[in-house]
Amino acid sequence: MTETVVPKVLVVDDDDNLREVMTLILESGGFDVKSASNVNDALQLIGCQSFDVLVSDLHMPSAGDGLTVVSAMRHSNPKAVTIIFSAYPEMKEAVAAILAQTDDIIVKPGAIGDLVGLIREKLQKGKSAPRVLASVATILEEGSKSTIDDWLSRVRRDDQVLTVWLDDPVRAAHLPQLFRDLVFRLRHPQPLGSRALISPSAAEHGLARRVQGYTAAMMVEESRMLQVSIFQTLQNNLNRVNFSLVLVGVMEIADEVDSQLAQAMTSYVAQSKIDALPITA
Image (cartoon, one colour):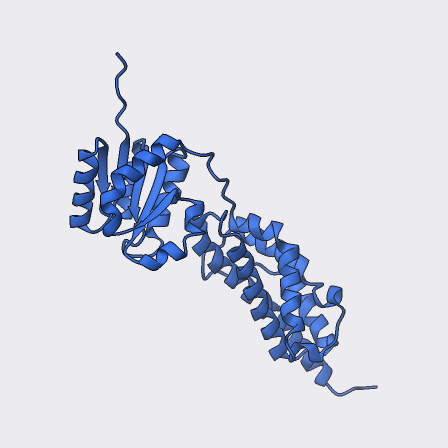
């Protein structure tokens, strides 16, 4: 006689009452249930036990807490069914990125009563092949050309920058190396607040913009639009980005782009002072 395997479920929620209710509902539905009230406890359980199902709140109390737990489960138990829930009905309208790493999202508390049936349905269908998640560095490396094209389209619509006419290849000449520097920074992160790596190409870019007739304000605006284009690329790839790395990646991106702008401005200002010197025989 074959022994029936009882599916193991991990429930994660910082609301004690709701967590206990879900645990009782799932246990009465025939599941072996473990629970955690916070992210750290959940990560410890995921690290030392194997689970068939994860049911996690999205906010505990931060918005990204549930995705942190989901990412950990994906790495430790890639075949596990993952379900997150939220108290906000509008989340059902904005789940494209979240569903890239989870199997379903439900709105609490109304849908909790349907949880047993939902889990049985997901388990019966079986786990589809795990999605291959990409790092922020990989997404930007693969999308550097499209990001540069997006940036150029933004620049073309900016009346201030277009007062200096340049061919697209000349205007964007500094960006391929900037993206290489950025990808390297993302793959070799620096402690936040530490001195950024020196970029000779950034200094050369500052000199070039001085010769081309840019003002300092134009350089700052171009840099701002570059960050917008970079973040648009990430937005376009939310269905495959590794959420556990996004926040750190965004901070690294902003810091690196700002650092390169500062280095470019330093050489720009230095050249401006030289240009202002009187001509001597």
